[in-house]
Structure formats: structure tokens, C-alpha cells
Length: 101
Image 1 (cartoon, rainbow, N blue to C red):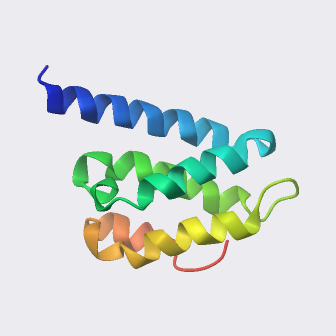
Image 2 (cartoon, helix red, strand yellow):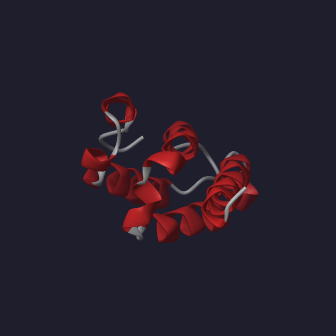
Image 3 (cartoon, rainbow, N blue to C red):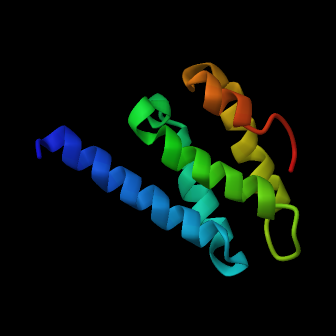
């Protein structure tokens, strides 16, 4: 495994961890903040990370409006996704939430 493959694997592993934390109200804020920071880098939207990122965003759209979660932070994350929709494959762009959860 070369260094790029290792980086991709480590990043996808981290995104899976973030996805798990996003499902828990106690961890949502920190996980969503980390994901929002990560999405501030255009490299976040590269193809190798797309499936993991979409998994995280799907969780955000499902839970952000629920009691104990942070709707505003969830909305900001989904807005970043919508703003970068052109970087996704057509399949993912179509799944990318376009508004508030």
C-alpha cells in the first residue's frame, strides 16, 4: 500500500468514526464541527472520500432536527454539501440534501 492509499484508507476510517459519533447527541457537536472543518478543504470532495462523506451527510440530515442534536450546525454542513454538489458524481449529487433537514 503506497502513502496515498494509506491516506485514503485512514481518512475513510476517520469518516466512518465521525459517522458513528454523529448518531449520538452527546457526540454530535464535536463530530459535526470536525466534519465541517474538514469540508472546508476542497480535497474533502475528492472521489475516494465521496461515499464516506455521503454516509455522514445522510446521518446529519436524518438526526440534526431531533431533540438533543444541533439543527443549525447540521444545516451548515448540508449547505456546504449543496455548495459543492458539482464536485460529486451525479448519483451522489442527486442524494445531496439541498436544504434544512
